[in-house]
Image 1 (tube, one colour):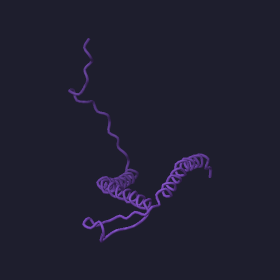
Image 2: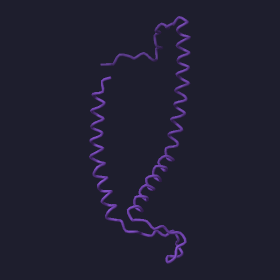
Image 3: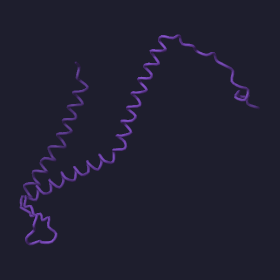
Length: 134
């Protein structure tokens, strides 16, 4: 198996991924080290002194959790918007399968019977083109 073109693309992809992921990882680690202080997130809008539902966690963890939650919500929203296109693709795939089956059966039937090609007929008078007038 000759993998020269594939390995060149694969190694380029690995280099690009490293060029993006390594600095991104450094930034995330620096952000986490710089924002280690504990914050309290209150989920109770009525009592700020003694909230019924509160979470204490490092600031970087809160921001990363909210970022992940945003990505998940965005992914779900995109998935829901594409429902119509997925349904159409499934219907068209089903139709293509049916048409391929019909084409195969017609090819088998044509292989058994001789093919008759009709002779070319003259077009009706009204469809003949007249030579251009000079």
